[in-house]
Amino acid sequence: MLFLHGIGGSGRYWQPLAEVSRGYAGVAPDLLGFGRSPWPADSTYDVDAHLDALLAVAPPRSVVVAHSTGAVLAVALAARHPGRVEKLLLIGAPLYEDLAQARREVRRLGPLARVTASGEVAGRAAMVMLHGLVRPVSRLLPLGLPEPVVEDFWRHSWTSYSRTLRNVVIGYPAVPLLGTLTMPCTLLYGTDDTTAYRPPTHRLQQLNPRLRVLEAPGGHHIAVRDPAVVAEALGSVLATPPTV
Image 1 (cartoon, helix red, strand yellow):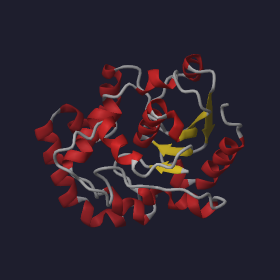
Image 2 (tube, one colour):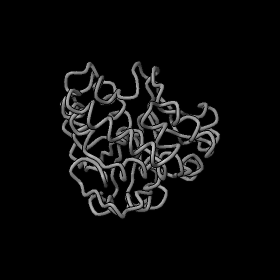
Image 3 (cartoon, rainbow, N blue to C red):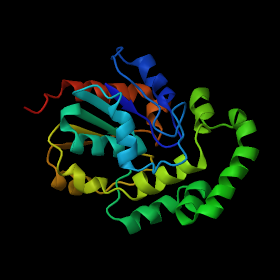
Image 4 (cartoon, rainbow, N blue to C red):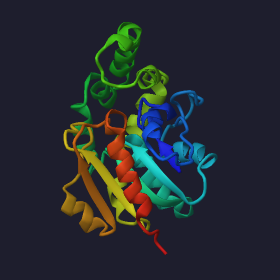
């Protein structure tokens, strides 16, 4: 199994799920530019760059469990390298219909995302301010997330964050690729998720009748706040017969 975290996360994002799951064997890498992976300043941090890094560690015929930005990369991995992916569980996947909608939706997610989408100078300044003012007290804030997740949120650079946001979350057309997938794919959303935009369920299933869309109580970080729900969905995914 291959576990892919979202922007600002790391492989440690999946620890709560491991604690309630049945001990599925897998790998949970830190994406390029995040966590303890390299942060190359000259990388484009687009889908090609992220997949090049992932292909070095992705087991063949994996069940891929991915959150948010990682879900976009999982769709790209499945579409480009179908032999690497047997099944998909995509949690809180941001699925924009076009570039204008992506920019509009990302701007409403918060100050850092908004200024990053708007311009480099303002975004870089905002990140410096957040690192200087918020990071020292982040463990004391009532974020409702495990300490390793909060700690690793700061393990990225302006370059890795901003380029991944622009080139993967905003700029990559994941929705059309969903229609090309031949393996079982399940989309899981928290009913209170205000972060991940998704097209209506009927639109997704028109794109690909193989897609399953599930909802469960919770928000964008359902995998760490209610991992038992995700573990149940994962069990359902594993019980789905693979595509022949």
